[in-house]
Image (cartoon, rainbow, N blue to C red):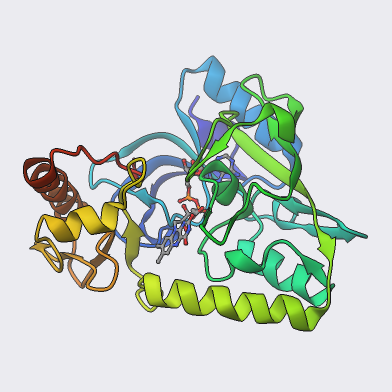
Length: 292
Ligand SMILES: Cc1cc2nc3c(=O)[nH]c(=O)nc-3n(C[C@H](O)[C@H](O)[C@H](O)COP(=O)(O)OP(=O)(O)OC[C@H]3O[C@@H](n4cnc5c(N)ncnc54)[C@H](O)[C@@H]3O)c2cc1C
């Protein structure tokens, strides 16, 4: 029996993934599930483990490129209310793994809670943001983390305290299959002061990133003490194209795509950048963009 027969109300087979990603391109997944409860999600993990089916959670799809070829296994979307709740008790905020980071930023600001304002404008769910330690030099999502609630490999609920998790620039070592929710400890501040800092972060981000483009992704990690964007400029690749994929003119560490683009175009451009940067600078760029 396949997963769609075993979980008929929550699993669909042969589902196009493009609409669920920022680039809006790519192929079909074997299975996509939108569970209603933690119990259902736990059973899905156990069934995948039993049948040796790959299991992955897709957040907002801002850091993922879907290939044209079928994506094997089960893709889970945490879009039901159980996984998108945001609860605020005093200075403690608990946000579901599927909650929109922008909603957390807005709600905490309205409650006079500081700590998230530098994350304004980042396209992410809370789970995706945690996994990739979203942020920049103004601040990272890991900074106010108290603890993370996860489902482990066996589908059991577990807690990961902040001190157990290692966060780096755009990475964390959290490798449980599901980030269920995250507890953050924020600080009280005047709403006007928070908004002022938020505006500054927004201006900075808008100047640095292709926020106007819906179809954009950031591609490489910054090598130690270097910027991937500067290395790409040094390799003369500003606005380089491959098919319908183009290096963004403002920040060359982003690829934007135009109508008719395929995943092959994006991958072709990624490989072209990596090869040319290596030839011109001797540095091998490490990919941040996940390819499924
Ligand atoms: C225009 C643009 C600007 C950006 N600016 C920034 C920026 O300033 N700073 C920055 O850090 N990033 C930035 N990014 C990258 C992106 O926004 C972040 O990487 C973001 O954290 C991705 O979140 P997501 O929910 O879309 O995750 P996805 O892309 O869906 O997934 C990313 C990874 O997290 C995993 N994952 C997602 N949710 C869960 C969960 N609940 N449990 C377990 N695993 C999970 C996925 O399996 C995948 O491995 C930008 C991207 C774009 C397109």
